[in-house]
Image 1 (cartoon, helix red, strand yellow):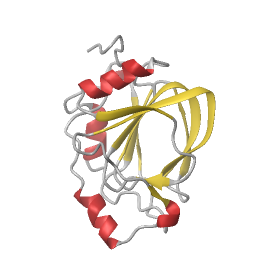
Image 2 (cartoon, one colour):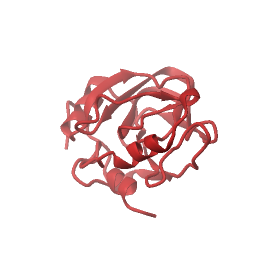
Image 3 (cartoon, helix red, strand yellow):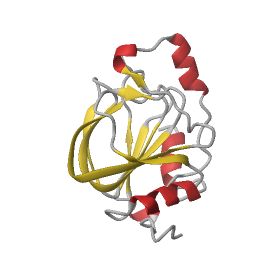
Image 4 (cartoon, one colour):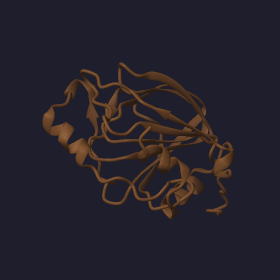
Length: 182
């Protein structure tokens, strides 16, 4: 499928990685779901309007273009897709106890509720697009210094799963990697 002049790479040609991160004192991550990343799913750099159109066409709303906050944070009430439109960056995924990950134009990831993330460094005019499943567009940003408690863990566990893959639509491989245990 082509969206606003953007045709994702065939799913079978994309390396999908699953990132499990432990719960920390400041960031809960997600006990049930990992973060998932599809390397170069978009085939390199893309116009951000085309990236946002692709996400919208596949049922993910509230699309924006910017960068990732430079402080550790998480969203207890939303799944979030992040698609790199241009440049590259080093992100810290999983909170202070997490892992540094280099991302570049064309990479797409889904972060489940509670999963920590922050931008460490940006290069080459880094630009990233984000979006959310229906009903999750008005998400909350929790900084690590705010912490979390049992009530927030219950909120994280109660967030409705996305129903479509943000890149390939339907029950595409990125959504399957997110929702299937393993």
